[in-house]
Image 1 (cartoon, one colour):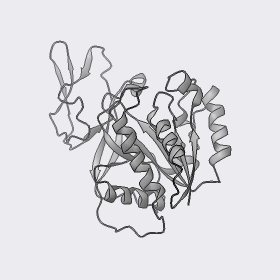
Image 2: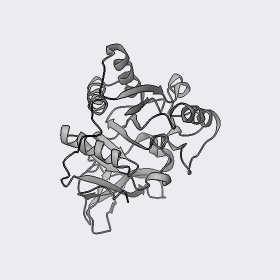
Image 3: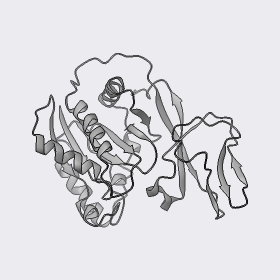
Length: 272
């Protein structure tokens, strides 16, 4: 199996770049062949998420490309697409999400790797996106299969030792994973993304304090979501349960996203 390991897709997330440097320093051999790729070096130099557009939305049929990231997307396509079987894309979040592995495709090898990772490291939370396979425009679309590793909380442009070590462990597990091994097919907890919950259009509303840092907490009808200076509260209207994540993610504020919502399932989406 040939694995593409990508760090620094977002220039203000240096943990992935640090992890790649550790693998270069140790020069260990693994079950799978791999090569490291620096996603967005110019944005890293400027300590910005991106220069002209989000590199992690620049792939597949729904790609959004312009400027510098458009050129980087083409270059990474030339270097990775068709030459690698699996992609590991390393990210961090300002949200309190702990260790997560995100699936944005239904390829059997993606699901097998995610299942293996969960069995090896139960503390890893699995998330399946709402848009999968050809509908997804994330960097992992460069390979037939792959996982996005998202860890937090950590501030932008900060190298957090604990998250470096934990991300390194996750990557090491995947690099040593025998993709021909039949992982036990038992029910597996996965959070299936349903959509985005945006801030109220009227200014002066904030994420409710009880929700801050409470990623993956079960919410039912009546749960407080937003609060304003007059202590008025907007509550969850649907019955639920739903599970918020990427709560108050700094990068999503430009889109007025307060958090993403998911439902809990016991299986991945059927690849067929």
